[in-house]
Image (cartoon, rainbow, N blue to C red):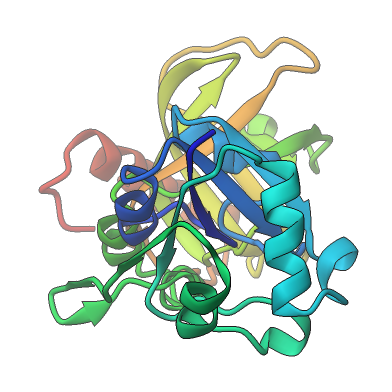
Length: 263
């Protein structure tokens, strides 16, 4: 490995991709605060070899000690690629200038990248997702935001009174709130869907992540399930009856099938 892009890389967004394409491999500093693309899932969005340093294992290292470790672990390393705001070493005491002084090879620094005047940062994308601005979050990501979860048992109300849904327990992801046009990916196959995330204010006020697949579909037990967000359809509304809620869900389904329909 002669060149590495180094960073925390939560999101693997457009700016991260600019770093990655300039290197042979990716070194992720894993700090367990990644909530857009957590853990090993970062490797899904690059075809470059991906390595991980756990922050808890290296946070005590001074900048000089960090570079020494890097050169031991990657003895053929000749180039490091980082972002303009890169920090490293104990208490984030090292910066780009420190890196250039300590590393014997080439240090390539990628400048700030903006889209529509907005700086592309994971923290910005995280806030956009929290505010359910999926369209802009996707634009900064350069792809559709995707989460995964474990299938769990729901109330059973959907299949009896409304529409059948797959209920998911989702961990370690930043979640939006509302009803979304989505694709539900099951065992690698993509299905058009609508997804609700939030408190079920019309039923029991419990938080849930529920997705309804538009086509007739029979789910196998223990399937791998991912949700890919396309756009926000509407916010979380309270309905006075299940009949009113069902009518709205039908409008949501129509809107998913017909993107230019206004709910």
